[in-house]
Length: 144
Image 1 (tube, rainbow, N blue to C red):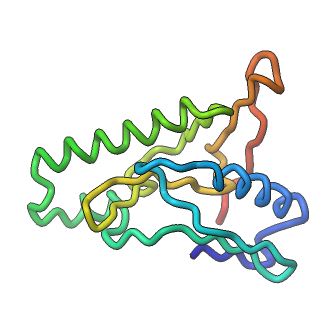
Image 2: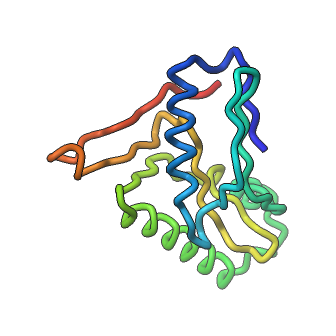
């Protein structure tokens, strides 16, 4: 569960939050974090996703205890590539632009899942059917 305090959002951010939640509800892929739900009230914005007990790939790489053998690393790379391929081939096309090990979470079966950082300044959606040249539709200020 990710919580945003009232000081962190404006009316514009609430509307943006709702648009992003609407998009996330449609994303279904084994290598994309599963969106479970959201709450948007005047008091709180909350995002609920599946829980991935092994944490981020960044954390696993920092404390590598030998569990990341070459075969497992290859499978993790394939998971990431499949997740990004799904995003890039979705309609509208989603370009993550903030792919890094801290934005990749690992489940109990060592499957890596791409997380969608809502309101990330690097998260853009290109809608070719809305704009002939496929220009940037949304971009946001970074969260603190």
